Picture 1: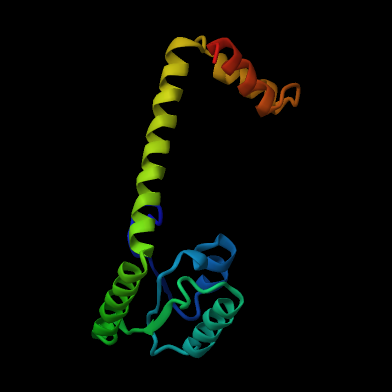
Picture 2: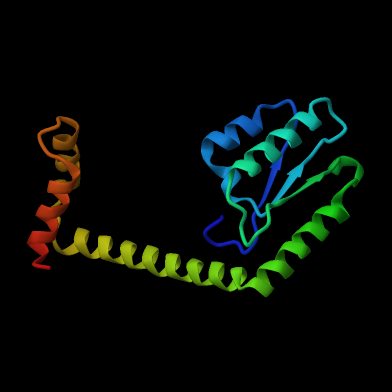
Length: 160
């Protein structure tokens, strides 16, 4: 999603351990806005403090850290604040050129993904023999071949 969305909102809930999993998964670095939902639960202050602590260690994007908004979505509390935080980020990102750079990076990624997919389709159709991929994976699994040598061999057969 972060490769295609202009703005990423990461939502965490206190008491679920989500924040620890998000930190491990690297999701925290992707957020443009943080939402701590179910803010009426115990532990909300701890989740907010952990996000703030993580943000203090990270480099600010365009001089600012993502905003943290607390919500109780079931009661429609904080929804307007989330929208305001998203709008504020969009305005800052537009002014600073960050939004244009993100969109350009998305287009670059889409191009590279499409090229990679089409090249692999052509390799499978023109170079690889039936069953060759599985035989190669067998050799990789047996550690008689490494992925780099396997790729180099296919590329050499393509005469590139």
